[in-house]
Image (cartoon, rainbow, N blue to C red; front, side, top):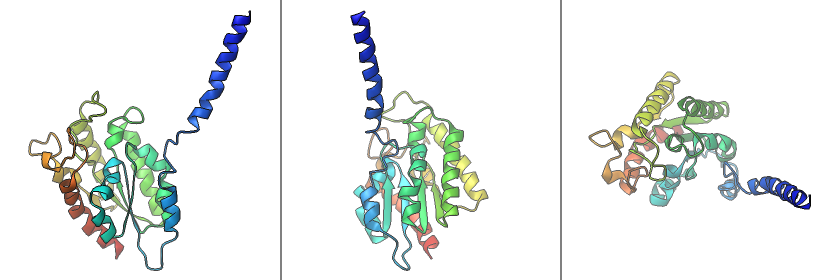
Length: 233
C-alpha cells in the first residue's frame, strides 16, 4: 500500500511539473525583439519604417549584409526556425506595434519542413492571408515574397517533395497577391538552378541549399529594394 501511495505521489509531482517546464518556452519567442522594439519607440515625423518579417533567411540577412539594412533604414524581424503560425502570433509585437509604413513577409520554408507540425498548405496560405489583412487594417502596406528554392532540409531529412510543395505554395500566394494588388517578389525564379531542382549552388550558404550566402542576399536585395522604395513614396 505504501508503495502504491508513493507511486501515485510521484506521478502527481511529475504532472504538476509539466506546466512549470512549459512556461519557460515561448512558442513565438516574443522576447527575442522585445528590447529592440522598446528602443525604437514611435516613428519620427515623416519616418516610413519598413519591417522584414521571416524565419532564418530573414534573420541571417542583416548579419550577412548589415549595410543593406543600415543604408536603407530597414528593420529585420526574422527568427530562425519559425513557421507562419509563429509569425502570426508575434505579428502585433514585431510589426503592428512598430507602426511601419511597409512590411515584407517571407514565409513557408519551415512550414514545409514541418518545424511545428505536419505541413498543411491551406493553413499556411490562410496564415499569410491573415497577416495581410492585419497589416492592411492597420494601414501597413504589404510586400509578399516567394518561398526560396530548397531541394530539402538538412535538419529534417525525412521531408520529401520539397520543391513541388514550394512551387505550389508560391503559385497560390502569387495568385492571391495579383488578385488583391499586392506586390509579389519572386525570389524563387531568380535563385533556382537551371535544372529546377534546388537553389543555385553559388547563392547557397549550406547543402542542401536553404539559406542564401552574401551573393544570394544581393540578388534578393536587387528585387525587393525597388518595390520598397516605391511604396515608401
